[in-house]
Length: 98
Image 1: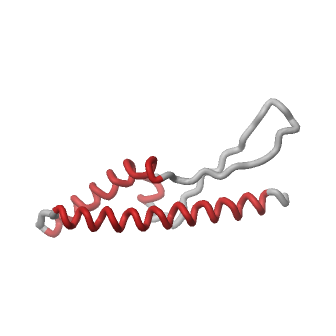
Image 2: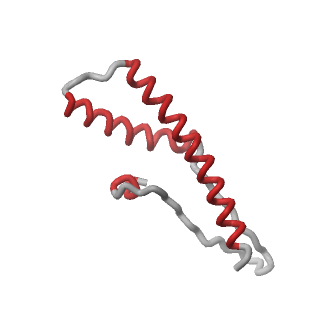
Image 3: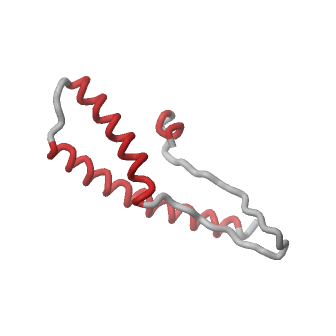
């Protein structure tokens, strides 16, 4: 995820090939970020970003600023997860035709 942020990526996708000992097994699956799993990595990223911005601006963020940032982050994260699942579903549908 750090590489995606560093390069300003609009999309991060990780594709994995599944395997199984039974050759008749078939199917595919989609995994998306969860609210729990994403929050710690993203919170660290946002915190570091905010601290750098505060240093440049020469101000100290208030608790109210942090609350607003958390609310905005939650809104964006919820939308991102929804869009990730939609894209994953589309890719699964297309991959079954190949």
